[in-house]
Image (cartoon, rainbow, N blue to C red; front, top):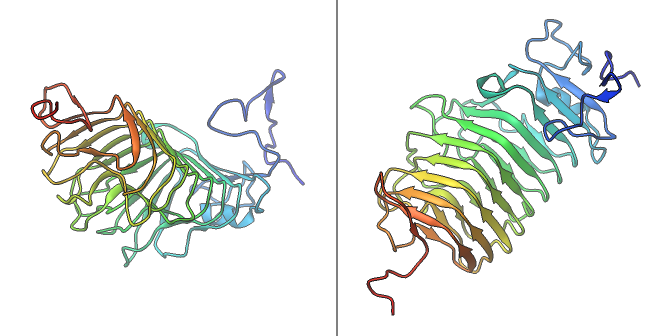
Length: 311
């Protein structure tokens, strides 16, 4: 098979790719994607990339560790709910660049149900932007397979006319999910209730080191991280910085009953009265989690008994 790196993968004997956390070393095939490819066709090579992520994904083989690399500035619009169904196991989808130059995937169309549907296990998605141009988007990502990772994938609200109810939601099949290093910002509330990261039976999930500024509907079912309908066992939620600045009913971290796990060093700013469950851990253990409901103040340990009534 022709090399996907026609100009070599080393410089002065040192490997260029696979040396850091961005592009993995893999025995699979590397495919390139660039919406700016003037040929309009693409073979997947560096000099002749596919023009869409969907086309590159179709070329991948399940279980082989294939790697899709989206070039700096790649832009792609998904307008049909089934247009980006990621059902092959072990695929890496990586974006190059930093800041606004990273690849952007925009969800649009005539239905709020359009989503990035992840149904293949053990896939990794890293370093790109997701946005939408449809109001009341149900979910940007729907995860129904085990062992998937969302790493440094950011949500950017395109305008005040377009919001998501949820950024990531799982089914009970979405176990061992890792969501880390994401910057998730929504500044206009949708009408529907929902949390930024919604966990349904997400056993052994890890939510780590995310920055979440999420304005949602003013309801207890809304917020930043929420478990619903099915317990999630052995969750680990740590080092997340969360602000839900609008509403007094929003519960920024709300874990479903009978869930278990550990929550550590999460910080929350919200309008909810302190000591009434801004961080509601259900059956999870917790330490060093803090919440505050007034700007220019230090957070209080939460959950914790109100010192005025504890004995």
